[in-house]
Figure 1 (spheres, rainbow, N blue to C red):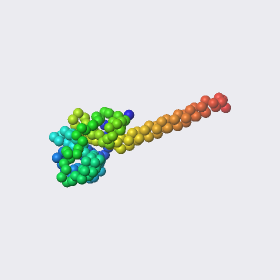
Figure 2: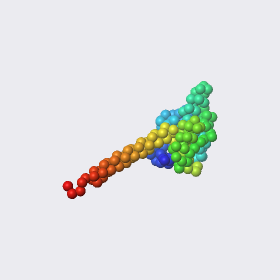
Figure 3: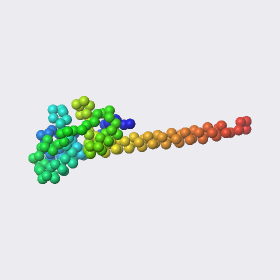
Length: 160
């Protein structure tokens, strides 16, 4: 099973953060610039929240608020669910599905290592499964080939 640590080592994107006092417009600009759907909110090197595209739509735009004057702390999710690097991607996917979330920060102690999305997890799990299928197919084909050659050698009459 693949772990969060392994997936993060293959992931090209970094983790982007914003201060709780930043304006929502700044957070949205960063999300667009970095092509991410969520940003971790950090204050004094501690994770204090997370803001997602969904938060912006549902808590700012849907209520007619101004992204230029609304602060991140007003709309962020402050009860942040997170995962540890040693957890499996399957565990993360179950958590995301159960809690209806799409992004999970990765913390090692209090240190923010990254963030994973449901899309990251699915892509990684599928790639692992495809690799495993390929390995099993190769094993089966090699085994058949070996048995076919061994059977032909053993069945040949001796002395002819």
